[in-house]
Image 1 (cartoon, rainbow, N blue to C red):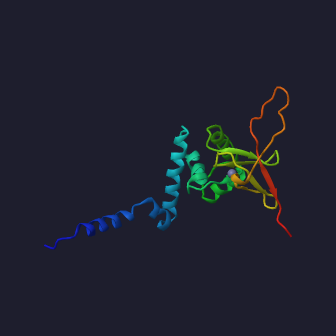
Image 2: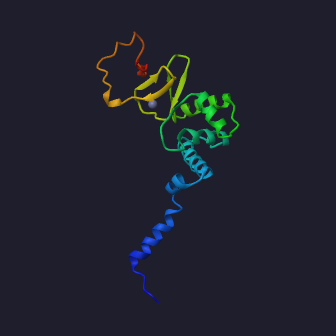
Image 3: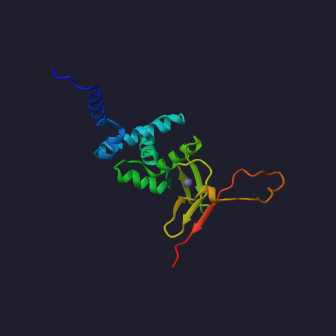
Length: 172
Ligand SMILES: [Zn+2]
């Protein structure tokens, strides 16, 4: 019987395992596999905040953080994304769920016009760009922002937070 060198055995072992790794599923898998991965990530995100992973919460959590990227959504845009994926969730449920995620500290709310709320999966303090032409919100570089002085809070009040939203219009 031929002796297989130990390094060859290890190589075969690592190739066999590659097929089952989550990374492989993400890049090579079909759509259903990807939704599974998103569901698992979404479920862990909910559990981290002590939220019960109901079906609707898991669906929305998967759309919000399933791919591991930060994003800014409105209730409407998340509702459209759920519908596009074939999930029946009402706009009211999406809105209430986003509020519950905020209360649990999973999202932060960014208000742009006083009327329009965006929900951000990145809960650290950071400035935003608001693109006036298409109404999207994107992150601006925190390290480039310097606030050297703030007006004194009125008597009997203290500053709770400072939101920086830089409104953009395209040139030309
Ligand atoms: Zn943001």
